[in-house]
Image 1 (cartoon, one colour):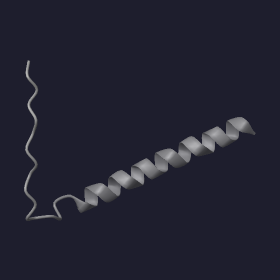
Image 2 (cartoon, helix red, strand yellow):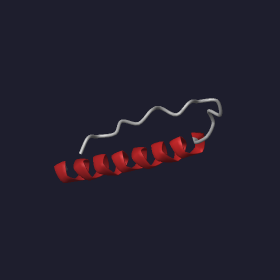
Image 3 (tube, rainbow, N blue to C red):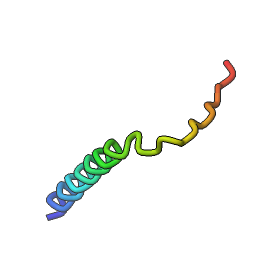
Image 4 (cartoon, helix red, strand yellow):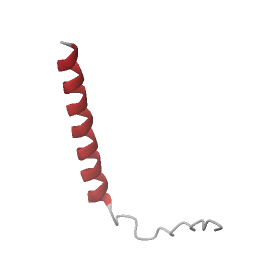
Length: 44
């Protein structure tokens, strides 16, 4: 039973991750007036 529970849990985590990424991709570009954040450049 413990192995089955772990398998179901991993499956649900994968499904949630997949659906979250699909939702985020669908939102892409919806904020037309947003200003891009400045990028930090690391010193080498």
